[in-house]
Structure formats: structure tokens, C-alpha cells
Image (cartoon, rainbow, N blue to C red):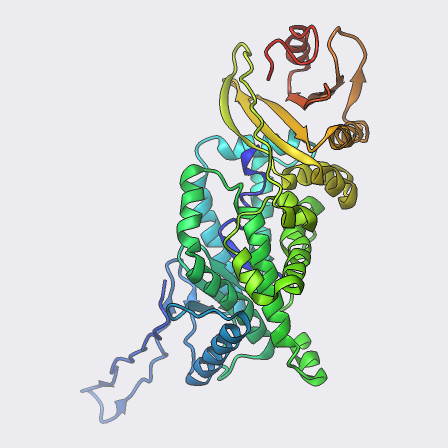
Length: 459
């Protein structure tokens, strides 16, 4: 279950809507050639040598006029945030196609590094079992490659600290749209320098635990969007129309709605919290909040943010299942619940309402020698009413799917829905417990070992 959302631009802070800062001098070699068999001399004027990144995409040079614009944007951001850059921002400029090619190549490179053998297949199988999609691993990988190509207008990388932006080639100055994107990414660069986001990212990566990522990123995107909006507010109506006309053409693809669920948190709900922070304490309050690690629930519901309500620790014990071994485990965030519940129905508000009542949660995944998965979840609510709402949301989730048929029988508590994937859902007043399995007979046998709720194994 862990990597549901990880492969969605984990280390990129994007404007959704290496080299250093030193420009690279391009030196043309003298290629004058003189023939000795004739009386004429032929002079060849070479094309300028291209500067390429590690994947072979061309890097464009920043002209002196662009450099002046770049530094003016830096000054604007420092004035608006009240923060100072500690070093000159690192950047790479691309053509639009070069930028998109870089996004794909770097994604595939990181993909090979981040996923151990069989891990991607398990992640996709997990999404299949939750009813999010019916893709094969290769099909879903291809889908995300397409997504990476067209997902952003610019990016800041938490790992190498470089902002990357596509621009039009052979122009002396950045156009208005490019400047707007640069404002967003330079704001992220400033955040990265003030907070040392690179070290934070590596700590999460080393621990293979990105639970702190989603809340902080929401605040960072909220501030970057706010600064970007402030810059755009200085444009007159003519310039605004001009900027609109400079938006690059999209890729013309339709992706499943559930793919965008994390982005709703970052750019929608995160903006609401950021606005309330600003209304209560100005930009200083936003700057201070960047040091916090809020939960997804605190972003979905601002009152939770300002009350600093933490998640409860939920202990989930191992299941003893013949032929299966524990492969992964982790905690649940409100974003996980919205991802699961909205992914099937396409309705965000009911999913968010259920997720906002999350007390805490934990999960464990088990796998057998064939790669078959069994997933167990244990979820608490803020109170009994909230727990019941979470339980009802998952019952609605199960009942709304044609792939499930409720199994009537057995001496266990809770409700069992069977199909190619089978799921058991129970609410004992303290926790909502769930088990998903590909083998419904194995799940029935497992539940038969439970004479009451909670199970004898007390997961």
C-alpha cells in the first residue's frame, strides 16, 4: 500500500497551472580549411555547440537580459516573503520538448532506483485490489510516463536543488508566462534553502516513509501560488491576455480522476490553509508554518491545523497466515482515505468528510510465493461518531462496486464482500478493521478463526 502516491512527483515541487547558476560559455573552434589543389579557399562557419544535460537534452543559455529579469524576480520574492536566498539559485532552461523529455527520462531513471524487484508489481496489484484501476504494471507505468511528460510547467527538485523551466528558444527575454512560472519555482528554491528541504527529502527516502511529505508540500505550494498570484496581480489586462496566450499546448490526454487526488490537497486545500494563515498573521505566519509537518487531515480541515490535532498511534499486530510473510507496513493519513474512497466514487466531498474524522491508522501487507497480496488495516476515529462515519464510508465503497457480492454466512462479525478481490469490513466501536485478499476461501478460513470482534489474533 505504501507507494500509492509516492510515484506522483514525490521529489518535484511543480508549477501545476546539472548545471549551476553560472552560464556556460560556448567556444567555437576554428574550422577554416584550405585546399591545396585549387586556388580557392573555403571557410566553414560552425553551428554553436550545444550544451547537454546527463540525458542528452539541450540546455539553453540565459541571456544578459534574462539574467536581469531573473534577478528582478528574486528581489520580488524576497520582498514579498521577507526571506533571503542564502545562495544563487541553480537553474536549467530547456525547450518545451526538451523539458518534457527530461521529465520522462529522469522519472524512468528514478523509477529503476526507487522500486526494488517486484515492488512496482505489488503497488499496482494493491491499486487493482482497491478498485482504483484495472491496469497491468506495464500499462500503469506507461500512463505515468505520459503524465510526467505533461504534468508541469516547471519544477524544483528537492534532491539536486535545481529549478527547471521550459522557455522559447532564440529569445532575448523571458515572456510573461515564463516569468510567472519562474516566480513559483524560485519561491520553492527559497523555501528549500531556508528549510534545507534536500536533507528532509533524503531522510524520508532513507526511512522509506513519506508520511510527512504531503502536509508540508501543501503549505509550500500554497505559499508559492500566493507569491505567483501577487506577481501576476501587477499585470494590466493587456499583459494578462498576453500571458494567457503564451501558455504552451498540452498533450491532449485524459487520465483517471484518482491520479489528481494528491494535487487537490496540494493546490486546493493547501491554498485554503495558507490563506487563513496569511489572514491571521501575514506572510510571517506562512514562513513559520513551513517548518511544521502537518498531517493530511490538518490540511483538509483548517480547524484541525490550528488546533494541532495529532494522529493517534494505532498498533496493528501481525496476522499469522500460512504461506504468507509480512512484506511492508506503515501508517494511514487522511489523504490515504480520500485516495481510496474517492478513487472509486469520484466524489471528493464525502471522502474528505470521512477522512477528516480519522484518529489514526496502520496497515500491513503480506505476500506469498506467487506474489498474491493480503492487506490488513486498522483505523481509529476521533470519536465514536467519526469512527462510524469512516465505517459507513467503506461500506458504501464496497456496496457501490459491481465487482463485489456480499457473502451471507459464517460466524464472524463484520461484513464480507467477495469477488476477484474479497474484503472484510468490521467496526467494533473502537476500530474499523479491514482485510483484503485475492483468495476468498483463505479469507473465510482466516475469519473463521475469529469468534468475536476483535479477532483472536487482534490485528
